Image 1 (cartoon, rainbow, N blue to C red):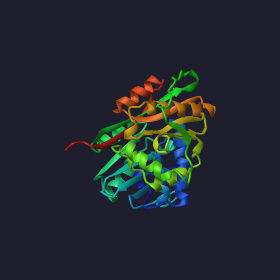
Image 2: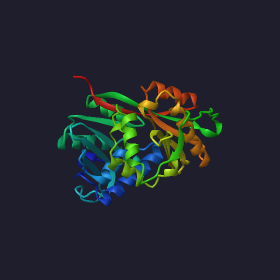
Image 3: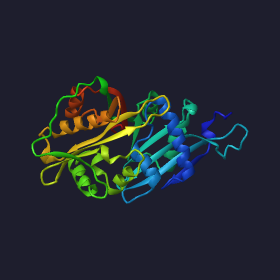
Image 4: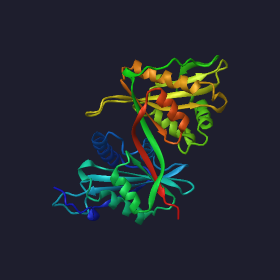
Length: 322
């Protein structure tokens, strides 16, 4: 039994890298939350930052709220009820994300974490992600004067029912797979060019790429590169496979598709998208999902034509004007 008084539960503040025990506790919480919600509660970049700690590009603050046993000293937490992670950039801006264990929801856990964040850092420069845009998250944001500033759609298609169009590569362009130890610098340059105005994707560093390549899901066979006759990288489609967990079957993901400015308008983006979906189909995956900004009208239109429909939505909140 746990006393239902989150305002008295201990909050542990961790600056920089998170130790292995807390990482394990956070992982267990996130697994339970994703099984309950069907959505990850924390973004991939934040999890990578929690493992890596501070860097030249950002600082990390993690707040962990532990629920004590009923008969234990409240200052000694036993069970991780929720945590908040703040990734702060060098200019003082940053993003906060909060995850609450399903067993501790509707008890004020998120409020306790937000209050602790207000005490320790304040909200200056911070925006907040709500993955799945739960009603409780919207209410919490409103109480602190935050409003939606960005929508990230999750779209999905069932590949067995999809009639994918023919989408040939432009003349002189071929597809090959990513070669670790060879293609990192060229990919980073192409990615920066393709996403020059994107708030996250365009700012990926070599450390970010290396961290993703170290993840268990990374498979260079699903990292497709489009090159011209001289070997110049024109675009890419990086796919990802989410393994089965609990009652949720395995699903493929269009992780990111990028086309360099000089190759845009040639049909390369569509051709790469179709090639990646077919690769996932070849792995026996019957469903494919992706994330796309709601205001990216050309991309949304393309995905709709390919048979994708909106499945869910993540919302970023920021302070209301004034």
